[in-house]
Image (cartoon, rainbow, N blue to C red):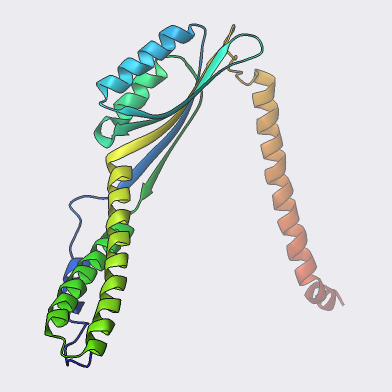
Length: 231
């Protein structure tokens, strides 16, 4: 309460209402890393640009360089609408030989809704403070209210900015993509028959070893009782 008799915490109901709202849909941030090799760099870049255009995406950053053997490489940060995320990855993979691919999905629904609730609370506080500001009878009251109003406005802008960032991250997936020009593709090595057999044998030995270890632990744990019984 302020000296004018008004309460600054009348926004509790607003925050409670906002926190109990359910989101229209889950807020998921999609991120992918993709590394490609190509023997035709210009064609690969053209195919990738076409896929990006078809997905209504855009390039956020690009770093292109020439290697010592005159081959070229590029590192790209691409943004595509979430609805086009999967189809774009599939199309991008066709522009070269995939040597690495990783995808991540981060659910920020709870954080998003908490930020929305806090934003609603701050908006209600600002409205109440503005009302109290108009009713202030003394300079001291006015200065106190203006100080608190400044703090609320600052936090309000921060929360609004955070929501805008969340919206951008959710609406547009981020793809970190690299293309390397090569003379020959990196071979994908399949395990030989012997490697598969030996791998299975090692796993079996480990299983037997673990069983023997468990038996030894049991014997040592029970040894005092076994000695007594044997005596």
